[in-house]
Length: 221
Ligand SMILES: *Cc1c(COP(=O)(O)O)cnc(C)c1O
Image: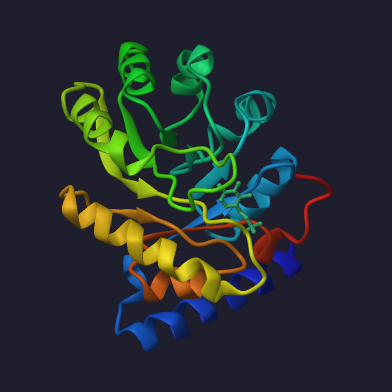
């Protein structure tokens, strides 16, 4: 637990320094604690340390933890892994925020689930590889579907650049996400992970998704 408190302190110091460089206020940045692979007890410890926003990658994995953490006051759970439409109904029950909406069809399915949800559209900017996320060309139709959906509240765009040890490699994708969001009148930028969150903050991130820097290295994934 102490390890976590110290890790959180270090992350907050890094956020503060990045904000100082960028002339931003740290209160503009939401820290999402990514707890995938870790047990429900890790979410409890993180909540005790003051964290309230949690990210999970897999519907099924979170299904097994949900009953142990849902009652934590003020806690909100974000799905940050790819969502197949056949799991959308279950996801809408389990999560408060879906960050990986990548098609108009998925948006409609989530809306049909009947629960109020915050949603973020995942945008694919690196091109190559088989990364998930919507292309820029698909974005207008997805945003229209969300804006027309009574149960969905659009909260921004998110992206996951190709992983690199060098945070600067992510900068163009972050700058691009910001430009695309501005172009489409969307505010809220979920970008930046342990390896590149300072660069993401410099490029305008409003939410950073941090696992390793808080909880240590995961055994897999
Ligand atoms: C795992 C994951 C994170 C957290 O990554 P770390 O490098 O451990 O901070 C953030 N976002 C997504 C989409 C992830 O899958």
